[in-house]
Length: 297
Ligand code: KIV
Image (cartoon, rainbow, N blue to C red; front, top):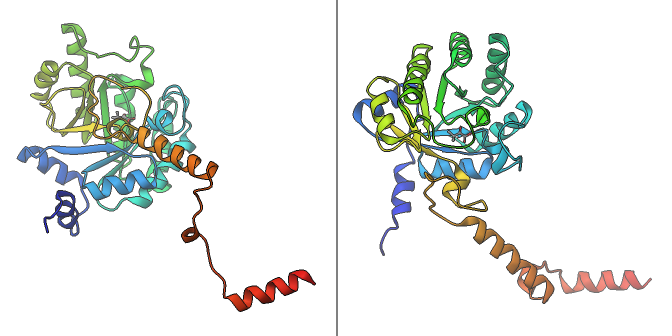
């Protein structure tokens, strides 16, 4: 009998140690690609755990993928914490990063630290992520790191401020814009971020910025030079309508499979093929007779 590759992977994971910040730095040093996915609930966390990914991000993309908001802007801190707690319950080994939602960290360093603390204490996250590399984001990152909480930065296309960036489009496509992103990445590193996400920037720009960054960089639409790659769970598994961004590679079409499964159930109910005898519970014939007798009384 042949062994399926997923069985090999599953057995190799049995003794997997929790992923730590030093482990991520070691992976960068060794040139081992870092795998990150988003997750928003218990089943997606279990899938990430079973697949042996290194980092799980409870992304504010969950606003759109699981909560149905039109963008990431409207999601509330309490909603993000609820998603993060569900993910925590499903994870053992990957590093768990909680995404600070728009409006939960910009106002002051105190607000940023208080929000980050809630992700750590109430949701069991190991670290938090914030968007942007300008003076405000860097100050907030420094304050959170100062409070003892690891911070992941995020430059390039930062969806929380997509309107100010001119929409959901690649960033850094001229020399000035590329230099701005490079300066932001270096500033986040100097502020103490343990890792940085590069989103939707030209591959050649990312490769040049990589020469100046010592912390692990996770790319999404930033080409092959980054230390790792991240995709949104629902994008890579096709749990969505439409194709999504250019950088998305789709590994399954679960939205179609889910719709087909529910349609098959609906068809079975309407044609009385479900439930079949094997889906019901039995009762001893004497007990049934006694009950029928009582029902007549
Ligand atoms: O919210 C999110 O899913 C993200 C990733 C795309 C990095 O920020």
